Amino acid sequence: MNQSDLFTHPGPETLITEDGHALVYRHWLDPKRADDSFTVLKETLAWEQSVLMMYGKRVAIPRLNAWYGDTGSRYQYSGAYFSPLPWTAELSSLRDAIQTTTGFGYNSVLANLYRNGADGVAWHSDDEPELGPEPAIASLSLGQTRRFTLRHKTNGHRVAVDLQHGDLLLMHGPLQRFWQHQIAKSKKPLGPRINLTYRWVVSSSQGV
Ligand SMILES: O=C(O)CCC(=O)C(=O)O
Ligand SMILES: [Fe+2]
Image (cartoon, rainbow, N blue to C red; front, side, top):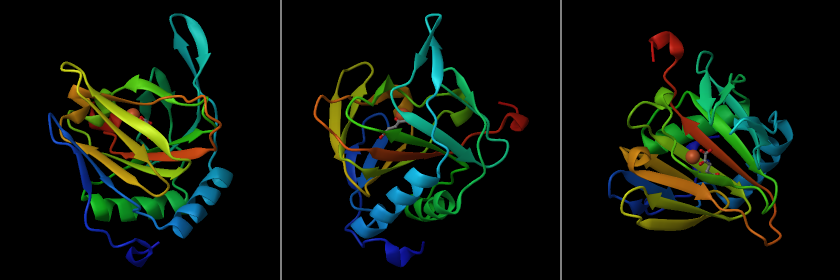
């Protein structure tokens, strides 16, 4: 992918500047490019349903995921360990373009597939120690529009945004310390959505 594949846009829309930053580049990918990406990723990524231990019980998380990245970016997510698979061409070319747009570097990506409205992600912060104190996380949405909500941990402020096909969300600064986020489940019949969250994971060999 090259820069001419990207829509020129007036600049990102600011969502949060309180205790961290969240902003969204609307239609970062044009619809045709986003369609192609969705198809390739849905067909080629090694989607699996992770099972976590919660209160001593095995619970299957309500979405599929797949983890790709540089060798050595082993990553813990909600109590489970992921060893990254090597970059695919599509994930790697999207990474290059996302790095150019956002100005941050990423050595790994967690891909999520929300199969329908019954899939979601519960309130959490991306605050695992491997991400460091002020992680930059860039999140590309493809497919079904879903509502992403952020809530401040202490003052309860809420910000909601409908993430559409091709939108790129960037979170950085101390946001993960002060805010949580979720994709709520929905009773409506919804189609599939893919979300890619690009992150920088400090590798264990660097002594985290
Ligand atoms: O699907 C999304 O937009 C968010 C995913 C997310 O929060 C995560 O993977 O940590
Ligand atoms: Fe998250």
